[in-house]
Length: 432
Ligand code: HEM
Image (tube, rainbow, N blue to C red):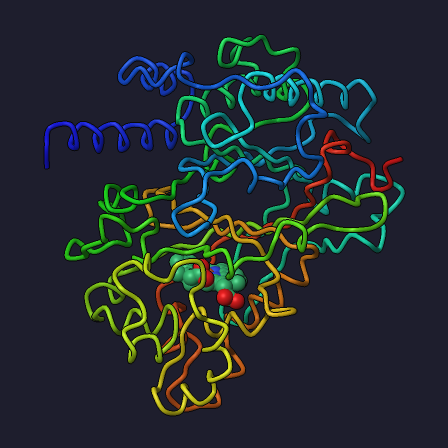
């Protein structure tokens, strides 16, 4: 490793740690130590109408890799917040929220180099109104989705998702939203979210994470990753494979609610998954990992090289989906992607994944964040992934030989509505 490569790793690790810790001191450290400061973060726009109406329209603002796959921003913060007032939100409070969000859009370019964000509202938030959500919005309370999980259910009113390649941008945005700072990226904040919402400083309200080549390997000294594990340097996620190939994702259009007062919205499901990768890395070889992550045929045919960069823009899981029962009998195991690909519609998945790894609580984990038109699309996908229907084959157990379920443990689940930008500030269930 050259000295400059080693400085690069130092810097990335430091920024990741600063985001995980949060607060003004982490921000100052970030700005001070590496000059990852305001001067290098592009500022945003005065014209909110120049931004997409769909809050979840991130793809156009993200870079693509050599194969045309969208590359998610490297650092993430999730803030689970509650409405601080009594009764229902007032027009003034709505204005405060909208003004705080527009200030962020002025402060940061709408991109991975600046800041991407969404604001979502839970079923519990909408319960305070006399009216109910329209039928065009499929947003049930969160619930356990398999017979072998017992997650805590997130019932906060609001979740704010902040994402950026710059740790300093994330921390500045968070501090400014909370009202700890009057400016963000050198731009004045007209209002603060913290005047209307109770915003968290610590887990479980504040969750953080990262995704992208290098980051998991550099942060593998954490509970759940055995010392012997050799998380590949180039892997974007702890489990050692690339994910989110373009053809294995729903499109933004597909996950958008098309009618009713929330036309342009989507739903967001966020689960926190704990990873225990001892057996994944110590007992299994790469072919076995390929069989359980993708499908047995991919392992037999050597389809996946390394972390799977060679797959281009399609993991090939669609073809494996058809042989899942046959594979259960002949190979004695089934793969995560092949099972999950049974939940497609018109040849494409029905959820758009934007998940990222985490070291929250000192544990290797993953915040599985996905957007879909309705929560039932997520439930259908999760049911296919769980493969409880395949356990009639003797070798396939709920957790054993059944994709990645031996290594992944769902700890929390939450459901939210991401309204279109026009209704993103404390909406009623029936906005005009
Ligand atoms: C630790 C957790 C997880 C990891 C590391 C992981 C990783 C992967 C990988 C490597 C693929 C194949 C490449 C790709 O298509 O992107 C994949 C596919 C997929 N995964 Fe996961 N996954 C995890 C959890 C989940 C969960 C909780 C769900 C939702 C229920 C899910 C839904 C999907 C879907 C929809 C596909 C694409 C299937 C298709 O091609 O139709 N994954 N995942």
